[in-house]
Image (cartoon, rainbow, N blue to C red; front, side, top):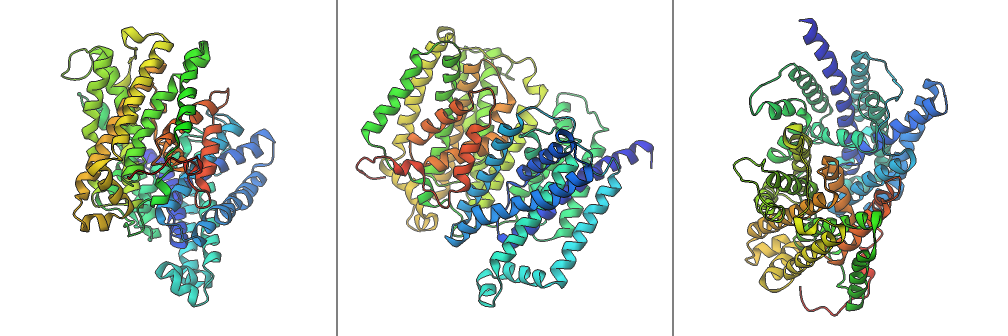
Length: 598
């Protein structure tokens, strides 16, 4: 074996070992609780920050900092999640989709809280726990997997775990304390998350967004193991890690070279996309659709609409930085309206809307600059409309899998598509290098551009409101409330799902193009997968079928983060989503107008 090959194998083993830890934690948590912990990466990030706080900021000995972080803080986070978030949801009989919303809320809450406490900048001084020896990391992974396997096979807790996995209700009748098993699963899952975070932090960007997203991508390891087999999770993680490292030696040329190189550098993303599309490990069940009470919001009385309209007109009297900040609100509201269509009206879970918004922004900029392949240079407004027309059919990428999947299985597909678009298109220099965004000639000032956004927002609201009426409204409402019953009644469910995802992609693209024009720049970070999770959580907690929800959510998301340090919006929205099993959608608390049908 050549020296380069050996060095790349070592690098791959280090990455694969961290991914294997994630897989072990996710599998154990899922087997004990039935929850796919999407917040695993956020827990890893928080523990990495805590270790750095102890060892770097407070000058603790590294061994003491590591012990407190891994044996106290990480398990403590798991216990809090079990007692405060997921056990109450289980007691109330929350459906799997609602539990997924809670997990997303925890992710968003921890990301926002970390940004508030430690700031959004990257840290390059995270302490190194096990040194640079990948064999030590691999030994930890193998020992941990063996210990878990032995405990599962030969201990009482392991027998109870197997009983709960096979049949939770029957296990409870047999005297098994399912709550104790679930608590143990959360404690162990959080411990592995903390260990993953402290091992990865010295080698990747430690910030509130980068590390959680990186760990989120390696969910593919657990899904490939069908959320059951620890050996499969470890082997898949190590194989992908070594393969990804080996591919870094190749530098293909030609027009497709940058894309091929990006794919080779992101094999975990490719794996996530493949396992989500081809063989989702977690099958959807009859209670996996987002329940009507989670989507339906009360129709606000005219007085409420008058107040909201006045608030949206107020920025016309602003100037300077206040007006420049306000310009982002209508554009973001249009993006969030896409979730009202997909989730509120159609009852489908979509965690990838930021990808369509980013493609809308990118295509608008490319068309206006004359850089879109095969298309002439277009004025800014026609470029925006053409971009919407190009992105809308791409909604079929998630719409087609939605025909056969619901709940968690569909969430994995939409998440995988969003991550893939972000990694392979939006964040790649071959697509965005030297790209500038300008506003239409007549709307160059902030005040005029804000007026244009308001006009387009009103048109989008009218279009989405039309989905409540007539045959379309009745079909979508029936599909959302009871998909099987709707199909039995003759509703063409596949066609309506495709319509919802296509319309959602078009609205997201329109909002993304407006957002890029508003800030006069294309920023890939504005459309990363973390944004998708934040936007989804915001719309659901405010009332996904309420037309007011995207307006209020957009104002909150922009207004709360307008200060010097971001994260406040994510912390607030995340807290509400994490407690969503206890708290009804906020739109349902508003004064309601008389109901005139769906």
